[in-house]
Every structure is written in C-alpha cells, then in structure tokens.
Image (cartoon, rainbow, N blue to C red; front, side, top):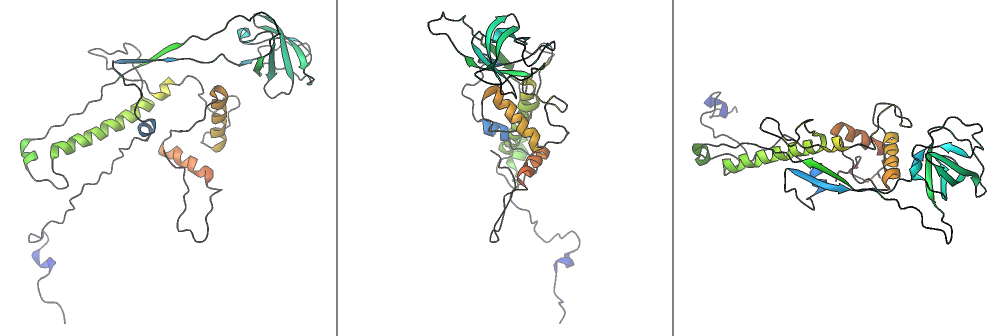
Length: 307
C-alpha cells in the first residue's frame, strides 16, 4: 500500500524541523604545500641581519676556446689564439672537444699558444674557431723550477631578507561562539595565514627579485629578496643557443643536454629539478614508453616521484 505518514517533504522547502547536516571538518582546496622548502630543509646557519652574505669559490678553469680563424693550414699549424691564454701553462696536454688529437703546449705568449701537434702518436685534426679546448693536465719536468703560482679569489655574495606580513583579527564574540570544524577561531586564522606566508615564501625564493636601487630598503622602498632564477648567471639555456636542442617544448633531449652541461661545469650530480605542474607532466611522459606492469597488478606508477 502507498505510504501515508509524514515525510521530509511534508515540512516544506526550508526543512525547519530537520537539524543541519554539516560535517565537523574543514577541507582546504587551495594549494599550500612548499616542495622546494621541504626539499632544502632547515638551513645550517640562519640569517641574523637584513643582509645575509656568504663566500663562493671556484677551481681554476680547465676549459677555454679557440679564438682564431686565420689558419694557414688548420691540420698542421702550431700557433693559434685562444680566449684566455692565462689558463694555460707550458707542459699542458690539451685536446679540442670532439677531437682525438692530443697537443702539448710548448709556449704561451699572451693569448697565443705554441703546441706540438699530434702529440703521443695521435693524428692531427683540423682546428676551427670557437672550438672548446679541454686542458687535461700539466706534465712537469723532473727537477724543474716550480711554476708561477695561480689561485682564485673568493667572492662575497649576499641577499637581502624580506618581510612577509599578514594580519589576523577576530572579534571576542566570534571567539566565544561555537564554530564548526574548529575549537578556536583565532588559532585557526593564524594557521591559515602562516600557510599563505609559506606559500608566498616558496614563490619568492624561486621567482623573487630585488629593486634596482636602494635594495636595502627605506621608508619608501620595499626590501625584497632575489630569487633563485635571478641569481643564475651560468648554465642558463635558451632555444636557439648553439648546441641546444631545437623546439619550444620541454623534452628529454633538452633535459639531458642541460644535465650534461651542468656536470661538465661542476662535476656535481643533479638530485632535484624544480618545475611547475605543466612541466612536471612533461617529465612524467619521459618514462611513459618504458612503463610496464604484470597481469596481476592492480595499479601502476607512471610518474616521477617528488622529493
């Protein structure tokens, strides 16, 4: 038989007799994670002033480039000009990148090198302007005088600190009132603003910049920190650069080229790549073709694991 008793729709459209069904939890839908700050961890030394400084040093360079297009015979000429003659010493074994020929430096006159071609039984190959020269090492004479000392000068680097601010204001009535999903409105608002400040710090550490004048700040100039991207002076690559793979999209060839160039400059392993969500999906696709799973597997992992 048909139902004839009272139903929820009998109370009308506003349901005045029914209790509100609200979960006692609050969900946050805005991004607030800071993967770069989490990967870097706590610093070894905290900043104690508005201008934080550190020292940087580097090894003597072991690469240079040919700066000479006036060869009479590029396969046998024993004199040629380089960009920085001060990087070479008599007794250096050198090799042009991509060549199997070894050469031995016998004299250095400003930026002009005199060499023995086809050293150690190798076959002389044609030289070309702008070719990179690798300095393999120096062979000293037994009992010879010590060479002139060479050294690098440490460089002082620095960055200004930035003030991140947020305001929290809650009325006494709001604190006293019962709230859904929380016990203290003031604490909750503090937590939310701190999450926002951490998110802003993450973005500034990557992309931030300093004012061109008065970076120390003043009553009219806001002091801001220089981000990682603004600090980069070397190992910066653009489409159209010599040797850089063509195309505007991120692909595995570009990643491999950059990793190789960084390794050649520093011999360091790259253990962290920071990208946005769009480029992260591009990197995920690198391993898509080699992804495999067994018939009994209930799930697969097709992405690069974040730190």
